[in-house]
Image (cartoon, rainbow, N blue to C red; front, side, top):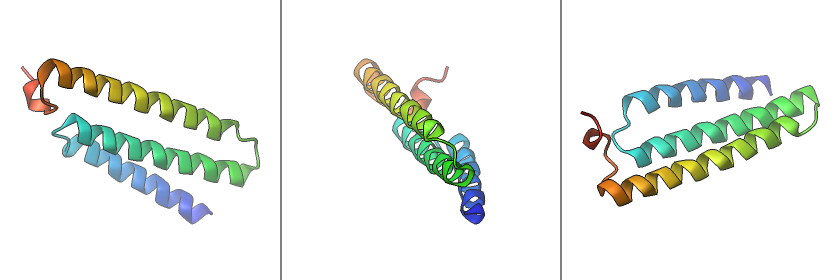
Length: 93
């Protein structure tokens, strides 16, 4: 279980680097963020099974991920209605 935890942390770090280097569109940024949240959800599930605590951490991360996804999609739809494009270069300068 410890190897999986290290693997998830490494994958989270790689996605963090990808998020800040390759994001040209808001939709691709949201997809990368959602995959990072999924990895955090799996990490919290590994943490719960290792420590044998309750499911409070898992449910807390799950609740925050649902709220983050809803807010991200709402902002994306609002920007698409206003600007007509989701490219980040349209919003800089």
